[in-house]
Image (cartoon, rainbow, N blue to C red; front, side):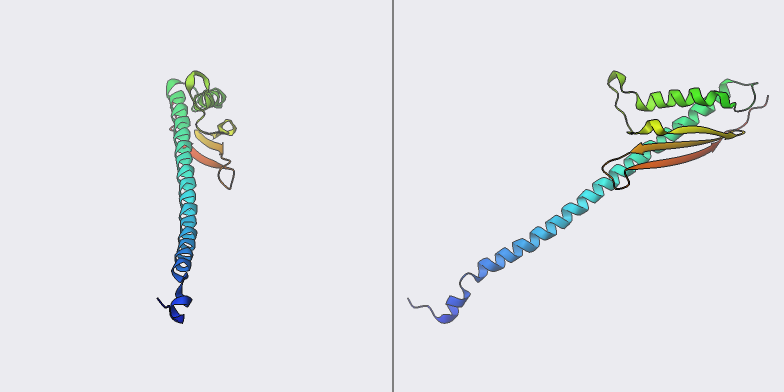
Amino acid sequence: MMMNVFDLRQRGFTLLEALVALLVLSIGMLGVAAMQLKALQGAHAAYQRSIASLAAQDAQERLWAAVAAAPGLPPCPSSEVSSIETAWHAHWTDTGGGKKVILPGFTNSTIQHEGGCEFSITVNWDEERLEGGGGSFSYTVRLPETAP
């Protein structure tokens, strides 16, 4: 059987086309993998921000309970803030009894009395997997003043 010159030039071209298609497909799959990684990082950051919001609301509720439990005292006494902050830290970072630390670096979080019945709650956390290295969430709350 005799092959013409055109057939000899075409030999192996299909294999070359398949290899180029495989290269283009693999580059596309790397792009999809990078997008998936960014999506997972964003979802994790959103999860941690939600936890920070819950922690700030918990601090607000602890402050509210302290104000409501002491009627007749001066409204929103600042002397109770340190004990509330200590209990709040213990609740959100307790590693005893099988509990896990929910937000790493949470111990840098603070509750500050701004005067009157206004409090500033700052929730901080560390995250090595994200570019910024951590996050901060500030929450300002004004509780109703109790009548003496």
